[in-house]
Length: 120
Ligand code: FAD
Image (cartoon, rainbow, N blue to C red):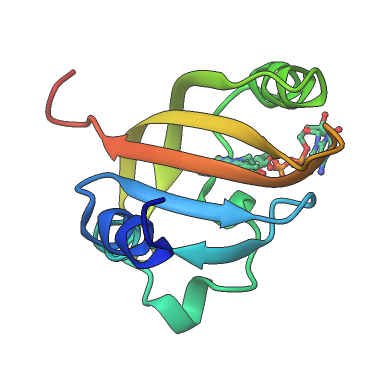
């Protein structure tokens, strides 16, 4: 079996912003790329909700669809307008997926996103 350390190092060094949240979207873990993309220091973002990243310009239907997918235990992928800690807006390509426990219930959510502002 692969050592857990290997998974941790892979996530820590990934060039995509990765976060793990509880069921209320409260951030439990964020990797260094998450700090870089969002501009939040680790100790400023842990314990905050993912909605702290929202620019509140994204139509609420998008969030309803997102949560609808998660409630069906399915991943959601799409674009969100996010805001860095300094207020700067960026266009995020986001993947959010439930992490299920052995009983098949959602235990955590996994979020991955990239800054696509320069691509579009
Ligand atoms: P909310 O109060 O979140 O409500 C919006 C809609 O979502 C409502 O219809 C509400 O019923 C539903 N909803 C909210 N929370 C829950 C819940 N716990 N269970 C079921 N339904 C719920 N948002 C971003 O803008 N940018 C991101 O980068 C981003 N990344 C995320 C990463 C992860 C891992 C997760 C789980 C969520 C992420 N979100 C992100 C979504 C975020 O949690 C908010 O739902 C969103 O930002 C809208 O916030 P709000 O305060 O405007 O509305």
